[in-house]
Length: 185
Image 1: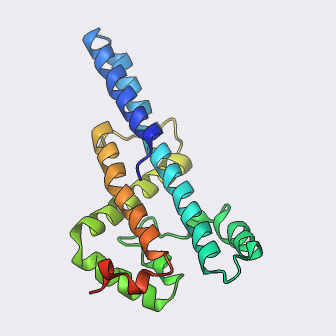
Image 2: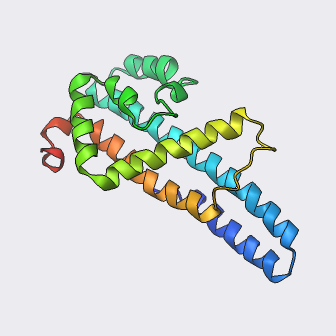
């Protein structure tokens, strides 16, 4: 479920950085590296928002008995559009607030799955980290925000790991989730 565009951004940044370093243009290389870390972070978070919005819209279509577009429109206009970042506690350690929106049974089952599958727990953590970094970039002066404690490689690895969490969200928001043998524990 990874985006080719984000992968290309990462590869282009690496290529440009290496080119500048080989040309001994260290200040340009460091500047490009700093800018691309921010761009990659925003691109990843934006991609996740787009994917989760798509997943929620598809979920509404699937569970609407007659595929009633009115329900889909209501969800898109009152829940997703301009409200995405309220769905998650970006400074928290988990996504329980999001899962609770789908009922206590869903939240409890997801918590159980996440606690037993370390790769999904790690994906959840990286998803939240990128969302929190996105918020920091947007709300704390993008141009001046310091991302020195993150490398481009680390951000990209967080993105790749977090993509697994987006796939998990899509699995959970399938009407057959509770009967899916993959997640029966």
